[in-house]
Amino acid sequence: MSTDTTFTPRSLTASEYVRELFGPADNAAILVRNRSTGHTVQAITKAETIASAGFQTWLANQSASGYDVFME
Image 1: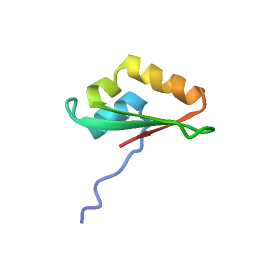
Image 2 (image 1 turned 30 degrees about the vertical axis):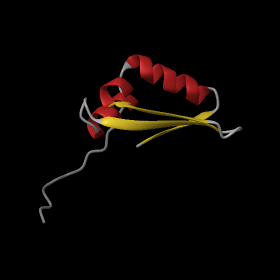
Image 3 (image 1 turned 90 degrees about the vertical axis):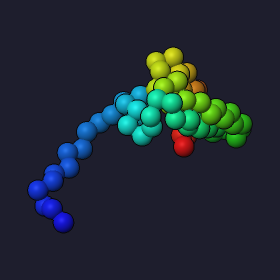
Image 4 (image 1 turned 90 degrees about the horizontal axis):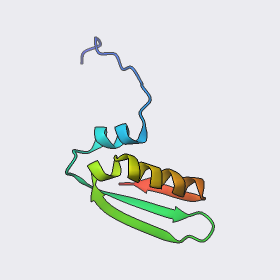
């Protein structure tokens, strides 16, 4: 095992996080769940769509409205 490698943590935006985990054409699942009612919406779409500004804005609005957002 090499001890020469150092890990430098860095912060990622949500879009950067998606791009690091998936290729642009990979499918990923998003689950949006209302904390109060338990109502859920699921979307399965391409990573490039999830990383897009419009989709990220929608997710941010859902989170601000009391929804939990999960990605797999």
